[in-house]
Length: 381
Image (cartoon, rainbow, N blue to C red; front, side, top):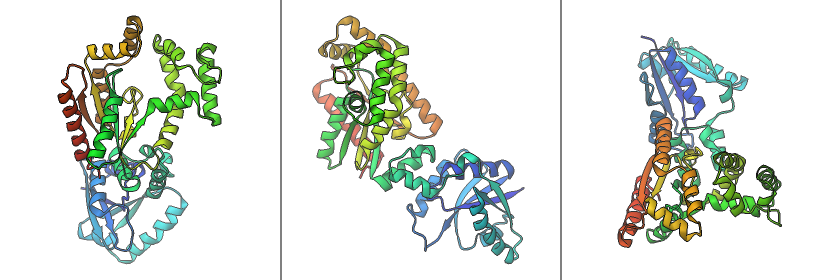
């Protein structure tokens, strides 16, 4: 049986590490991932946290075990009958760093060899240092680490516990989000309601940055001059009449708005600490689950409640049914969310029934119970 060890600090583990370990596991019968203990190094995460994150990231690799070690790696390898140390290198600097370490190991005469794996080019710039720098600036760190690691980074570095709040049209996601803010005051938990619809409204109306002016011009070009207000902003009512009557038009609008919304959303979330609610209708359909680590409160309501609320907004029966028909219902949203959780191996859904036929007291208790579950299960501090 062939055996090898891959050593890393895993502070935190990232996809570059995972790729090297997977390739090692494809080559050797048994692989040990050794997490180093160095009392002179200042880690972001303690040893148990690093072990836990690494084990979770590698849970699908049956021939890989994760442990910790201290002292010389070659001593640990010798004592555990591991003849090969595998090192991943990204560039000449890594080679220069690893070669003397290998030579030191050789000088101890323990018969431990070093095998070098060159990194996949797409991971050449990945490092734990880069990952932490991206998180510090609220960047798209999900491209670099698994979601469970992303969540730990947000908690440790940004003091954030991000949860999506979504649901079908007129199910009451904004109402539930507002109630969570109120409950936060009662439980002494900071809660922020970041409303993606409001951010979209700002992009389409008032933001002065050049890129957002270009976005408004793209919307006018695609949907015609009738959606333009005199001040150059977008008439959302006129735009809604178009996109809620045509699936292709709605897709085009979402495509135009996707990147601007994400950039503005990240800026809006910056420096907010505590429970941060991503209040957005299209978390599931737009594959935005990663933003909240697939942790989502799904607000539900029966069709009668939805129709009644849409009537209160001034929609006539024809408009009402068009709106309901052009958007996914909650069963489809839930399927999308569950698929994302299965794919990413991480996430949770909390369901809240916000139908009108709930007695007022029962509805409030339902929302309160869900809030308590969220802060308890995410260990919100």
